[in-house]
Amino acid sequence: MDLIGDLRNRIELNRLAWLATNGCKLFAAKKAIACFHLDDDTLNAVSNIRCEGDEEATTAVQEALAIIEHHSGRKAEVWLNPYCRPPTLPNVLTSLGLRASSVFFTLVAEPETVRAREVRNLLIWEVRRESRPTTIDAWAVTFQHAFERSITMRETEAWKKAMEDQKARFFVGFRQAPTTLGGPWPGHPAVVGQLLTSHEIGGIYRIGTVPTLRGNGYASAMITHIAHKAAEAGLPHVYATIRKPKNCRIFEGVGLQEVTPQTQIWR
Ligand SMILES: CC(C)(COP(=O)(O)OP(=O)(O)OC[C@H]1O[C@@H](n2cnc3c(N)ncnc32)[C@H](O)[C@@H]1OP(=O)(O)O)[C@@H](O)C(=O)NCCC(=O)NCCS
Image (cartoon, rainbow, N blue to C red; front, side, top):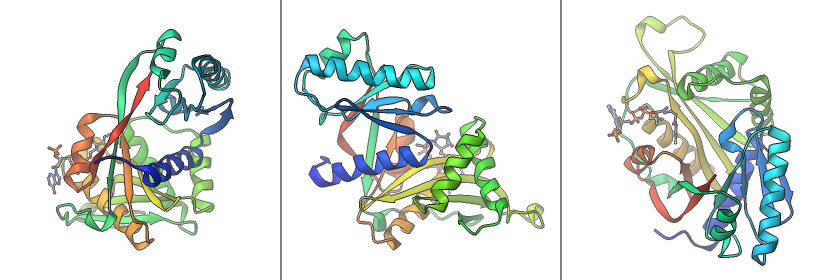
């Protein structure tokens, strides 16, 4: 499926909004966007390059890379899609010593069509502004296990703010079993996900299942739940961007379709 005009723009804008709500700093550098995150290297990137010629592009990319390195102390990637200008950007990046290393896959669906096999023992809660802190804690604990990395106070604060501003919606799924009754949560925290609603599209992000509970359909159930929340909010499309090709299967399995063109990651 080709990604055309308006849908492509909405995905791009929603993705930038998602980066901002997740604690990224976005700098509109000269003719490019520099994004950096102090705790998550995978979000340090130059994107949206819009230049008129190779010389201008070389300066813009160098400047944006320098901003990110200065603030984060780490190297950044360049996210290159065919809407970046000029078309000769691959040559520019090569001359700056960068190489195309992988791609982001973008998958899209109409939210009502997203369906997973039913899982009976999963209860999904939305973390709300007025939720007791324990629900927010459940999100953070599950995120750390699922993504196998610790999170910082800075990230937690960014998420709380996004929640308070109602810019992003956070979901956590609990695996229900008789032995877990009576604790602070209605089961064992198993799976997380985020929905970012802006620019009339739903971005599905941060899908993760704790390692010991993978393969039970929890991620598929979470994606479906989030898509249905997007449908309830009246959004005509949902999308996800995936770095690992093997993870595309889960999204395709519930009905999202890969779109072209993809975004190249240069480093
Ligand atoms: C990617 C990830 C979220 C998958 O989570 P998961 O809960 O294991 O995913 P699911 O169980 O829904 O799907 C995994 C497999 O189980 C199968 N499955 C789906 N429903 C099932 C069910 N009810 N019972 C048993 N198996 C089921 C799926 O068909 C899928 O098989 P496949 O890999 O052959 O397609 C998980 O590996 C993870 O958290 N990884 C680290 C974080 C990450 O990289 N997230 C990236 C998101 S883009």
